[in-house]
Length: 318
Image 1 (cartoon, helix red, strand yellow):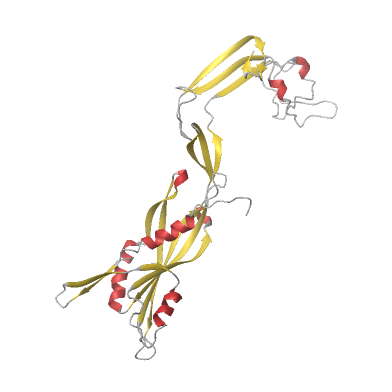
Image 2 (cartoon, helix red, strand yellow):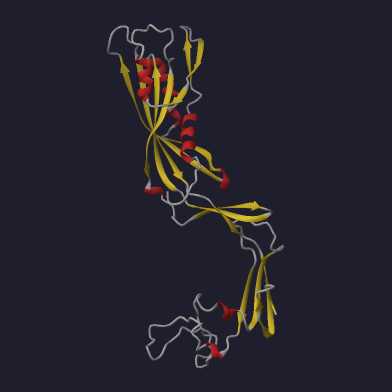
């Protein structure tokens, strides 16, 4: 779709994160003196509630030696929706430096899209006491949200604080039926997870650390040339054109400086160069710089008298 193929496993990480929160819940059985006589870890698996209900009810006569073990937890992602309240600047970017073949390159990624993910957690228990034990090990941590830090895009170094918000809890007691029918109490707890979906990563961009700027003297005969695309004012007419000039020289002089467009002939900037400015980081152009870093720059100004031309073959002024 849209000519891009990528997969960051973002949604998979959200599902794994949610299930991991509840994989260490235990049920304790005590005797009349309050001493713990047994301790059982509650297993958890991904799947809809109906799947586990069917597994509980597929042996109504209790003729099999082993049924599904209770208590048990299950969870599923029930839906997702766009969250406009957390929308980021669409053209904003995340950048990360990488080294390819010994050269510093820049990987970039546009801002992610915010989404809300709906989850449901199910607790299947045989008696009310087991259900309340499970609830009391979950509910105190959500007030009403619980934040978890996740390395969501490791390649870009993106670490995200994800809030998981509890909605509410409800219970279902399937006590109707024959005396031989197994009783099951099902607690359902609803959660919302506020996450992001990230776009593709673009690589290959180089970090610009050295800049050369050349200034030239424009001959008078080039003012009449169509190769120079100047910024024209609204006061221009079919018989006389008015241009936007800089105040560096007398407006009555033909050699006044104009503001020109980038589509002007490229050869106009290669001849009659009178000065050059070169900006490099302190320590040289090979200095290690992270994207977005502030660094001290050295500025070198060179004046050419007489003017020189730029040589494409060796990339120098001569």
